[in-house]
Length: 304
Image (cartoon, rainbow, N blue to C red; front, top):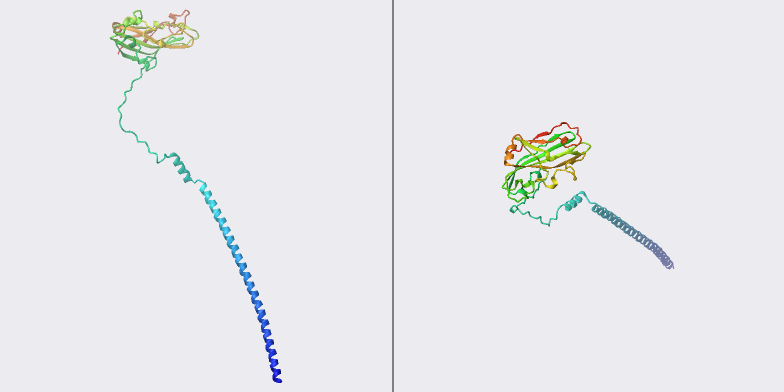
């Protein structure tokens, strides 16, 4: 009996201990499960946090790269000094692909230059040209030229010889009008003196003056002037269109006068030649307040 009781007691104890063990194992199992779940949650949270961190890092990286790209693009858009110089050089420098035309270094024969015909005029160069040769023919040569002006000053009237020249005529062969005074040199050797004369009226009234009365004196002979002989119409000396001898108040007129000489006249006149300029009072109806009552002689050399 005692044995049975002891066995029964032992059995109860064994079952009790087993039950306790089972409870503890159950609690331990539950605690383990909870710890496992907690660790899983923490791992999940860490993973999400890491993912967020990665995403944030990638977004920040993308923003940084975009900013850098923008800065680079902006820098590239703004031309630098070197770019400007290169563009200017490209604008001013011919295309390298275009070939520079080579200069033709072959010597070409000189082309004959035909001198322009210069007609007689009262200019310095034109005065050297002959208005005699076209009418007389033959050989007309410029023997003497004087370009030093001389003035006969009477006060209200001034007569200036601006320039004059001597031309020789040899072998005249052109047919001339026998009724023209110029025919004096038809088929004859001789000389023509041409003077460029300026007459200035400084008074307040018109002055009557005969320029054809200006004479060449020398060797005891004299020669009167002509306003027309061998003088182109455009260069004839005239006071006014209606009357060549009337010089208006405060006016200045310029034109050419001429003298025709045969050889004998010339060789006589070449000695101490003077140009006798008459006094304006010789032609005035009312006396003018002149500086002198006489004519004024100007030196008039006509020799070579």
